[in-house]
Image (cartoon, rainbow, N blue to C red; front, side, top):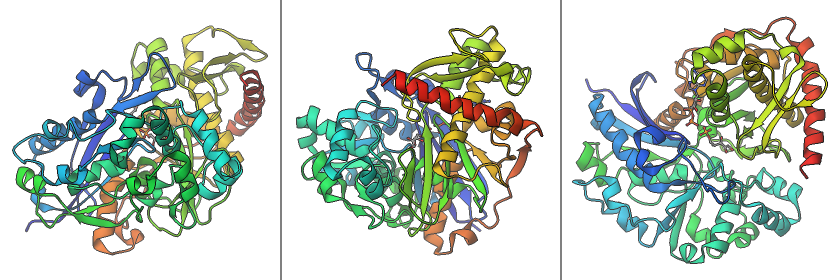
Length: 526
Ligand SMILES: Nc1ncnc2c1ncn2[C@@H]1O[C@H](COP(=O)(O)OP(=O)(O)O)[C@@H](O)[C@H]1O
Ligand SMILES: O=C(CO)[C@@H](O)[C@H](O)COP(=O)(O)O
């Protein structure tokens, strides 16, 4: 008998991934398209374009994402996918990025010709070709304007869950309005990257979900509606351009004819609102009390489920993608995997195996050396550049490659711990860490994580929790069952590392030293 299946997509920074799962949540097929290597014609570095004249200005070509979807669908077919059994699809995507649709976008999406690729038909559908993405940090001026509009950073954080952050969509839209007025005027609708990807499947512009919508500095996270003063501070008619946000698990309609005709989907297949990759990871991870999730993707993030919102200045409160009455806490560090990759290339001959060997060959605490590497403008703390310290003072170079490798990984995780503690995460007392994302397959990296947090580290069977979270959300929405029931037959996470007994003795003082160093560096870079 044909079984029901569910499809999940993840349009993250470096790749587009797709999975089909069955009713037991087993993975049947998964495929991915890596932007830099599979779509070299777009000349991105890891899926992003850094403007040579303004290194803070970082975008991604919307047509690269469209073309990636054409390729992904073909790859899934070649891998044996039978789309006729898929009963629901949902998506996940890098947060905060925005897509600008030209006039008549719904008509364009509804009338796609199934005999042609998407990229052959959508090249004129967008009013901005290179979309601002989460790595951008060029909107400091617009951030100030947003905060001023409501009375300062604390008030903005109280309303929207975050003070103004450069990558958040509100200030990015304001910058488009201020610097590309014609493009803004010809924009009929604005999507987040998440709502963009499901718009294509839906055949019309899809609503933004509450959880990803709370990463825009535009939504009141308590009333769960757009905040008019903030919309007005960004640009005219923004409410119409954004459309009303919906709870994350909303069934937003049936699949478009394009996918029925071209890929043999059942016309009854439902499209479920998509969300950001961190909220989607929360869905994809079985996070009970006492668990802290750490995603080691392009960005490093830490997140957990919250019952009530609170006002925080370093970090974010987002609406919860599973239970619309709850919240989630999020910390995001921009220099994650790509920075580890840079150090790997400089010190370990471009090999993760050598990187692991070097990491394992150095002692916990790295002989008192510490290093902080911010290839692109970091979010937490707001710094750029390389900063190295020996036991006593700042230095320009370490004496060995292995010290550099350990300094990079320890520095990254000490930062996460320090900000997590400031945020109020209860680190260390019975905490268990659930790691996900590309670097979570690196055992040596996870051992450092366990030691810095003095907590055991676990992983799930499949490392891509965001993509799976989208597929689970598809089932969650369609089945009408509770989330707990939907994920009940997921295997328990597997423990990969325990902290060494001497870990707190080594890392507690390093966290204290980190705080002092960062305070000094922030003063210096004011
Ligand atoms: N063995 C490994 N050790 C450490 N990092 C790894 C390893 N394999 C892959 N990665 C990192 O994983 C990253 C991609 O992770 P992923 O979660 O797919 O990112 P995203 O979802 O942001 O596109 C790459 O940048 C790469 O550096
Ligand atoms: O900006 C944030 C979260 O606030 C990032 O976490 C993006 O959502 C990108 O995610 P990855 O591609 O690194 O998974």
